[in-house]
Structures are given as C-alpha cells and as structure tokens.
Image (cartoon, helix red, strand yellow):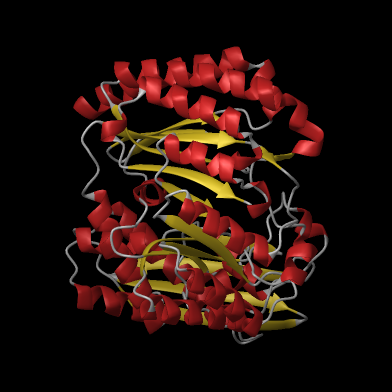
Length: 486
C-alpha cells in the first residue's frame, strides 16, 4: 500500500483507516491532497485500486481562530481520514461505528471539546457531522468522559500510583502480546526476580519520599501475578506495607487473572496484604474457545475461583471478557457475558479482539471477526450493563481491532477503578517496578517515560541499571518542574 500526502501529514491515521478497507497483500495507491483557505478545509483523495480510480472531494468550513493546536490537528486529521473513508466506501462497505475518529481515547475528545468551551449538544453535533460517530458511541463516549472526570477530580495533590509488573504466566495465550514468559521456561528465575523486586520497592520508597509524594494506588499486573506462590506474594505485600502509608491507599489491585493460578492461600495472603480489588479473567465461558486460544482453565474453575474470592472477603472483583475470539459468534459471546453477570462481579471489562504483532495468534489467523458481528456483541454489552446498573467509566481502542472498536470497563456505583482511569488519561505520575513496567512522570501536559527491562532474566542481570533508572526519576522530575516554573 502506497500513500502519498500533500498539504498536511497524518500518515499513521491514514494507514490505520486504509488497513480497515484493504488487506496488507492488496495493492493500492492512495493520494491525499489537503488545503485550508478562507476558513475552508478541502481534502481530495484518490485511490487507485484494481485498475480503477475512486475519489472523494471533501469540504468542511472551520475557523481556526481561538482554537487550540490540539483541536486544530484533530479536525484536520479527521478531514483527511473522512475523505479517505468516503472514497474507500465506493470500493467496499465497512461498518464504522466510531466513524473517522482517531486515537485510542475517544472520551478524551469529549473532554477536549468541553475545555474548548463547547456545550454537550455542540459536542454531539461535532461527533455526528465531523467524525460521523454513531449515536450509540456518542452516548458511550460522553458517559465515560463524565465518569472519568469525577475520578480525575479526586486525584490527591502530590500523589502517585505504583505499578508492579510480574512477567510470568503458566502458559502463553495465543492472543497475548503482554510482557510475560512461560514459567515452564522461566520459572527457575522467579525466586531471584522476587528478591530483586523487593530491593526495587525499597528504592522506589526512597525516591517517592524525595519527590515529596505519597502512594495513592497500587496495581500489581503482568503477566499473571498469581503465578507467584502465596509466600512470594506475601513478601511483596509486607515490603510494600513497610514503606508506604496504607492509610492513604485508595485502591490496591491484584490481577489474580487466570483461574488456574488462583488458590485459597493466595487470596487470603492478598486480603491480609491490603489488596482491596482483584481481577479474575475468564476471557470466555466457552470451553472449546479456551482450549483453542491456549487457556488451561475451564468455566467451572472460573466460578470456583470467584466463590473463593468472595469467601476470602473481596467485595470489589473485576472480570475480563474478550469479544470476537477466534471461532466465537454473537450467541457464544452473549452466553459468556450472561454467565459472568450471573456471578455478579462489581466490575466487568469487555475487550475487542485484536491481532498484535507479538501474539502467536497473528501467525494463525488472517482476519478478525466481522466488524458488524463485533459491534452487535458490544451493543449487547452496553444494553446488559445498563440493565445491571454498571456504568462505563474508562475506555480505549487498540490498533488492529475489528472495526476500530473499543475496550470498555463497566462498574457498579463506588467501584470504578481510579488506577485504570489514571493510566488512560495520564493525569497522575505512575512509578513502575518489575518486568516491563513503564514509569510515566506527569507535570501538567508534559510526560516523561522511563522503562524497565521486559525479560525477567535481563531484569535480574541488569538490576543495577534498574536502580539507576529510579534515580533518573528524580533527575527528570527536577527538570520538568524547572521547565514548568519558567
């Protein structure tokens, strides 16, 4: 696929939308010519495909006066993608519920427009006319934005979140692209990894104190943290309690994740360790699909793990499902969602299936579930969540998902995850520890990232560098603060 642009560059966005219409092996040439004169945007797009030419000449009146550069860039980009999609629709029809809206955080566009002074009705009009978003998705974005805003307004001054990455899993799922290694290969390094992690917690506590900050949220993810033993988890919890004031911790999440790693002993250790929110992630309640994607648990194990968590005293449980897993149709997804709802967790997160480069599934499947089927699954999710009084409160989209659709977290009143919103909206500094963690230093609109090594062996062997990167947090924070004050 060859894309040539003139007048305005948004190559990433054009390739993203072109990829929704054309397979990577199809040959086509796309030319995009952008101009802005006398408050009018004009984008002429021409697609040469299979010896024929398809075009779209798109016009839109827009006065950039008093508009922020962020908004101007979004409007210019949407004009280019809209012209492309209108031309491509003449070749093949594709359902695009999010229209030509780019970016991984649709709700952020709502907040940006609110900050620009637009009213709710004006925002709805912009979403419809400029971005061509469906009414259902407009309502979803608006609701998420309002719920996010409530949580963002509650972020404590000088607070940070702590993320701890545990890069081990019992096996690697076919669709997974997260930082994790199969313990059949890396299990022998788990003890040494935990020993180093405890030292990194010590160092992080020192750095947090020097920043004049305190920990407001802790999130232990992965990988599958419950691949560790109850004893190893307890060591981590105790070290955290030693250094951080748990009276100020709003939310402490442990991704218990895969039911085949969950035991009563680990759940009790987590509860005693201060964890107040856990995830138990079935992904699907169809046993054939679980086998197909490399999961070793069964639907009954999901139910057993959930019952154990309730008995251990957890009253805030999240459960993840994936819409559009290979071989699943709409009815199979509905069955999974209804069975999870019957368990009655406080949080349900529904992800749209996507194929990532690092996932084994990419080598075994060329096409995702049809976008119309996917949207039917997600529409059913919205309907059922509303019926069961769960509100959508955080949302993001991923590249290479069918129909450019969304992942949404739903929660009952009072159970929305502050950490999930913080990591999406990047309004609070997150200090990352462990394997594959990414520290995000946030000072106003400025963000600096510092990465930990992904592989547990590299994490262990180069641990001195991990500690040096913790010192780098202080250095960069000082520089960002100086720039903020000048």
